[in-house]
Image 1 (tube, one colour):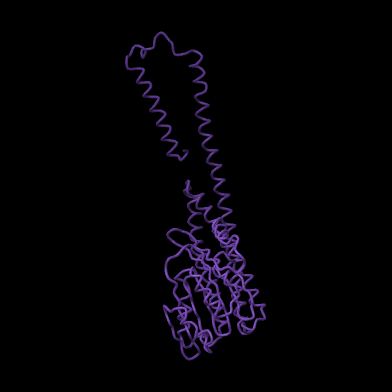
Image 2 (image 1 turned 180 degrees about the horizontal axis):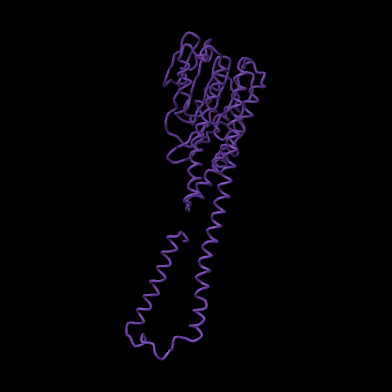
Length: 354
């Protein structure tokens, strides 16, 4: 949340339509891949320059232009100029804090997606914005950085028998959306394994780190929920759209993607309930543990209160106390007191009371 506020602060005072990249600073070059295809053939052009895309923008075949890196605002403006993209759309492409949405323009459709990945080592969620410009024969995708989940789509495009090769550009846009949603299930599976691990540790061997992990999972569910709910609205608007860029034959596939989105939302809500339950279990265990500690300490105090009262009332000044005549008795008693204190601290630490 704080990160998004900082990103919005970069645009403070700027007029609408100002193209400002709000993501992390990057020094690498943008990379363009062009896939031109029809029912009979598919050609892939990698590591292209911006001007190499111009012939494909008016091609009669279907074309997928994928741009890795939106930190180069001049490149975004280049496509805006040649495709007559509205300045507000160009601004949204460079603004990485957009929520998933679909907007209709006379010349194109504008779609914003959120691709989510899960790092198994750090157990962190990473969100990347993907923007799509959809025209009659062309889909242009803008990604923040290289690396994505669309390799299966690229392989399907190179398969002569695939339905994707025979369909129009709007079906490719649907396939990109559907692949993004399907990848949510992989992320949820990884989070499910993390939840099971935390739940097992919570019940069998809770420690001081368990609360941090529960809190981290809770924040991840909040982030997922903010991403998935707008995706539901996006697909719903996509289905209801009467744009000329969307064929009726695509609607049945969009309804299937909508069902997948509902499943993801239900799973996220289930995980939120599980995490809330784990937090209640942790607090209950903490309360029970504190009661157990107070019980032991109360027993110890109860035993020593009358002994302390007796020694305090009579003192230790009896006439026949052989220890008083020993020159090493005083340091021995001090050492014994330190030993008792150290032993009690070690016992409390072993019982995880400290």
